[in-house]
Image 1 (spheres, rainbow, N blue to C red):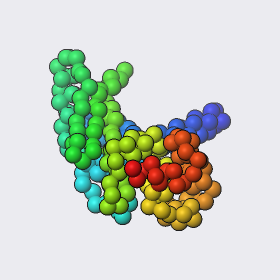
Image 2: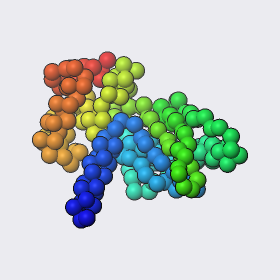
Image 3: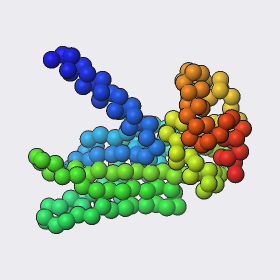
Image 4: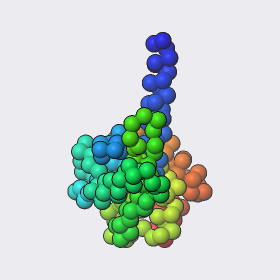
Amino acid sequence: MASVESKLRDLLELAQTVLDDLPVGLLVLSAHGRPLWFNREAEIVCAVWNRTPLRRDALPLKRADFSVPAALWAECEQLLQVAAAHERTEPRIVSEADRGLHALIRLQHRRTGPPACFLQLDYRRPRGDREHPLSPTALSLMSHLTFREREVALRIRDGLTTDEIAKELRRSKLTIKTQLAGIFRKLGVANRSRVTAMLNR
């Protein structure tokens, strides 16, 4: 029995790691607005939506105080009211396009208890602090990368070395090199200078 529990725990940790690296935020809310589960990208999108102060690299200063944006919960409440009246619910889209924030909200019906709200969150604005913003082409390229790869790609764009990136992100040089290889493969380039050129178009 302990072996099965151990394997299940390992599988759940692996799934969490994979979902944390997705370039889209995933958030599940109870019918009372309590977060049941969310990945790292959802933390970032919600913090930006809530106008949490940002660090130098434009990521939230605090990530421990997770808070669901009021505009998103208001849409969830409306969907839950429609479901309570036994009417068919359609997914809803909430956007603050000028800030690059987008959310797709749908209800997930459960076998027992009230439905849960499932949110897919997207933040399409550049996260670097350069004066020169990312172009639509560069933003499109960044969407192919995981959250961690985007952190590395933005620092490549800023001209940081592998050692500097590893130090700033508190990762090993080997991890950064692995993420660089993933960036090169996904963007179809062979070196850092090509990444810099593509993100500065």
